[in-house]
Length: 105
Image (tube, rainbow, N blue to C red):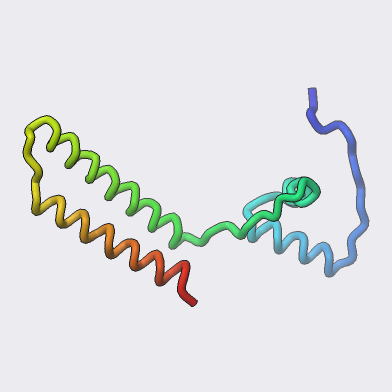
């Protein structure tokens, strides 16, 4: 059974239609989902560009490496200092890249 069983039809000008399509594309939603979110009081944000997903992939990779270091340290009571320093440097560089790309004008 459908959870949404009330159909609404609206009339838009060409400009309103263009704006709705543009906003739906920017958020990665279809027009109906965007309208439902707006009705519920949720203001969707723009979908991040590919740089964001590249940075997230790098962060997952570094996190995985740090997890491997922790497992090795726990099992051997030994820390590979050079590998750890290398991963820590990657994190610092990535944080700087995130600040420059997403936070600074």
